[in-house]
Length: 459
Image (cartoon, rainbow, N blue to C red; front, side, top):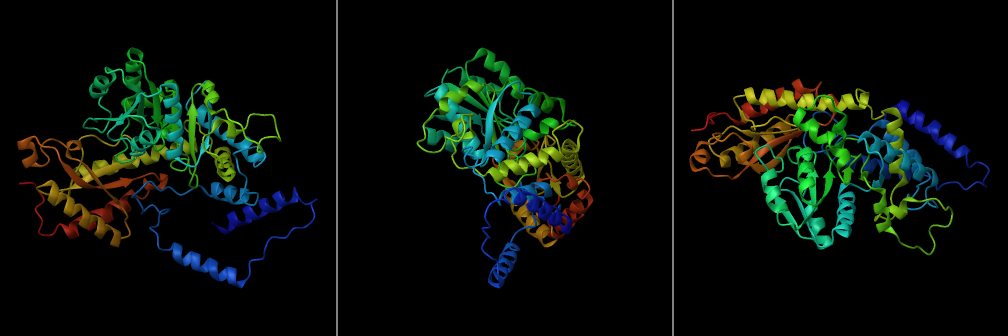
């Protein structure tokens, strides 16, 4: 944190403390020299990390929380509220209701029931638990590019799971989905708006048309990509999927991904508030301080950090979810950066690019080599060399069908599909667009060094 932010936090802490100044003094345990030494050890240990907050880190989905989120979270931790019940977090529970309402408004939901969670996994669990209660015994279907948590959750819930083959762009295949729906065994279809591997966006608008012909629930897993509903520079195809969100039965979005929040902060929203009846339960001791509906009555998860709600609420006040606003412009910058990186990769002599440009802000590409095996080995070498230049990428094992049919000649002749280890970047920091030249120069230099004496064209 900057000195200025420390000062702002210190001032706010004094203001918070003043609200309890009428109580008898109860000083906190002192932090002495021993504590100082331990904190210095912590600082040293934490240096054993990639520089996640820096623009040269362009690997996994790690976006630094906004300074106001960090400060608000730290401020709330002096109270350490628990948002499971009003007894444990009156102010933070109220702020959570407001923060969740802002998410629902962003998705244009006319009404909703929802709350924050510890992350997308638990939020998805809750959505599929509700789906299982409403369509008992029926299967869950999701794209083969959907997050692996859905198959795990289905197993935990004792529900059958079916993976739907995706197309060459990584989107759920509609013909394959309809074939499954014809069995009448599918109770819920999980539609992913922003897969975590390649950022693909399933065609929600078209899946809604199938829902008119077949009886099933639609759950939107927008844990990663949901905030892109605010972006004005999406393709018409991608825009249509996001515009259809208000018609889904449930939605998951993770503020700790693109929402500039500390981990863990997920969220679940239901279009029909009547699903709240499924949560009905009794507690012998927790809920006597208020007759108002509390968040523990509409959540599977019990104890939850009220500080997460405070941090999200504060961030929303500074950066509201409005089209064309500063928050939306940051998402647009990330998408623009991904498209520009894709364009440069396509013109490079060192790389193969997939058939389709990025739908959001995730870019993947293969090292140019005669076979997928050679390409995979070269990608690993480039990954390692880039890291020595302080450029941190990611590796992903992906299907060769995401690339043009003739990318690897042996595969095109045999019509064979296999996997190839690709290089991958998540350009989720708005400043990635400003740093793109730096990223590109380091990537090119790494590729040039490791491809010495390596054929540049497939044979």
